[in-house]
Image 1 (cartoon, rainbow, N blue to C red):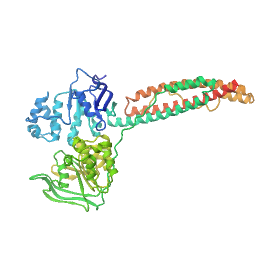
Image 2: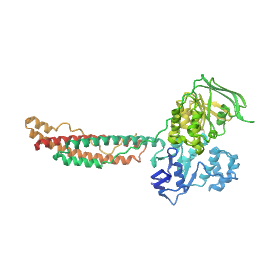
Image 3: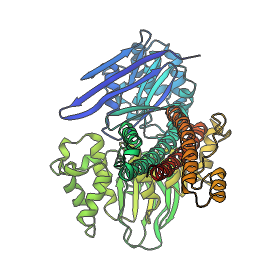
Image 4: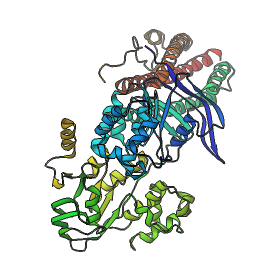
Length: 612
């Protein structure tokens, strides 16, 4: 049963000054589709959402909406209510009864006390939850969710996943969290380089399909170039001869009609190279019977931790459990209430926190900010390279910090941390404000970093690949988890090409006409000195073969066009099957074209002899 269409963008154009954000972009969203929206920072994902809800307008094209469309938008930065409690906010903005929303809120980590508080007094994470509840309460059939997992802890993310997996309406979801997208979406919308392309399947299917489609295009382009070269060589050899002029002209016309296969340059993918840390002793830090907290309030007690150089520690736990408190205590941003903290021999640390960008000098350029923080041994080019990998390339490094967005300032602050050659890195949610490719680059860079890393992150794919040990903070205690990160996730979850492609009977792989048919050989043997009869037989047989091979080429070309049209909507195993079929079809086409050219040469040679 086909799904009804909710909205369509037709030839959409959006410009900001001379910059074209969308250029005749097209896509459609249907009822019940769960769509992950991805693309580089600045590609226009949030702008697209604003266009869909009417906050921004198109410069060209049409946005067609169904009369049944009820759209709800969860913004990253929206004006928030003043002077009302969270419960009153939900009551005023939702259709669902508050008790029903509270029940869902409890699953998202909210407590009854949060609903009674003034909305403005809630932390960023709890405000996000309340806005999400308000959106759900308006019962839209299309939700637009812009980074909804920011500031959520792991358990809350899993609860949100469970809700979205069973959500009967449609949603568009912007997120850099690959695991979250993998678990919640069934389509992927790519916003990149002025185009918007919709792919079936979740994020893994998308990357697989992109890689396969590019390899197919590259193979097509290579085969096409080989064909052009063969045709031109034939024309150069026989085009001047009157007997072959017709065939030469036919081949030239075929060449003119050949649609040029263009392979777009891949967007520059980030690759972060962190300068190696300075040399230290074996031990990085030791915490003994440490009590962590603020003033009279104890958050974590009896904390014992010993890390050797090169350990990558992932810190996990509920929001408010004390993850950030631990990092602040190690960084000496807040004093220990009790116990001892000792850094190893020559160990210095760098600390990245959510609001560390507030310490930036607003009058500095991006480059100046990075240069000031960099270790003296780090050269200018290394600074520029890191700036580029954090999406500040070209003239962007000369921007003043004061004109940067909040996300851009956070990336500058992260760059400062990475350039210091610190043997101990403390990173609190470093992937916020980064796009897919930059998160991937940071993951690889930190995974290979020789120093010690202590990282807090809600991005499961990131922390699972970076961390070699897990420290869980729960119920006021910090304990090293006796297992891998996957084991930890499993414990949380527990507590809370099959068929080969068959396009019909495959044509037999054509063989090259390098020898004459048996009839020709017999003619040659019986009359070895009668060149005329030999060439007559050869011309007849070559013409016969040529006609047959050209017919086969027409069949294979039509089959190839059909396969290429099917692959656009394919995913998973079907995508691999189609890719294999296209590859075989291309081999058949290439072999047939080579065979045809050889037969034409053989026919030309025979006709030339008979004419003279």
